[in-house]
Image 1 (tube, rainbow, N blue to C red):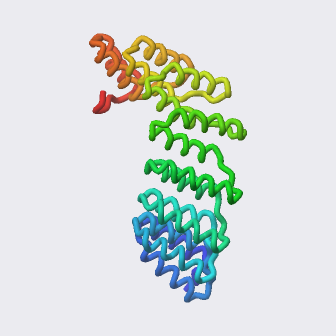
Image 2 (image 1 turned 90 degrees about the vertical axis):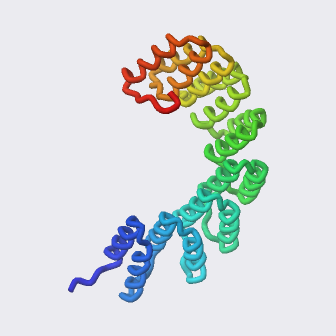
Image 3 (image 1 turned 135 degrees about the vertical axis):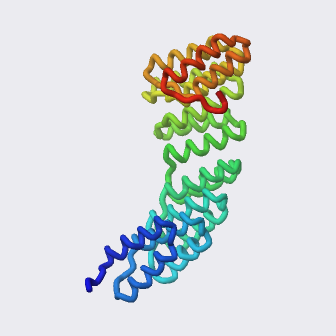
Length: 288
């Protein structure tokens, strides 16, 4: 009989967890200990991910806490896995408590973990709490990146605080952190919904000057802004500009324009675009 080694056991554990059988993964863990092998962080990370895949968050948190009491030091992958799952399931307060425990035990934390919590708070429209957590993070010497600022800008935009979002964008640039296409697009979309398309166009122009190319979502936001103001001619110019710059329109691009034409009672133009969809290899959706 060939005796399995820790690598074989680790692979078996990973397979069981991917099959949503973390219980069998723990059986392999027991066999690992019985054979006298040391349990490593990779095995524990595998079990943590397995429990999270099965939405067994309580057991995952217990495993995380047990790791500390039994002398195992979770790495950033372990911490990121459990924090991400807590945030995804709207348990942001539990995620914050877990980070505090990590800090008390001098376990390694990273900007990734803090970004997850800030993003989750912003999605829950708890923007003030997100900024408080942001300040705590800075005080601890963990400095923000483009993801941190983008999450905060998104939170401000969702709360209709687009002026504050614009200020934060400028602060981000002053801190030598380069905004990405998502950062700009979030702000463009919010400003367009406020009916300030001219300001949104200026942001897109500034974005291009900084070397960041708008994507389909950016152009769609501008087109939607013009359509909200019944400026269908301007929206179509943005559509043509997008195509001219080599950015392929998606079904949302067509939906925005078709909706704009229908509201202006220009049904011939709407139908022309509708027939163009299939020629472009796209499929109309329910909205279309």
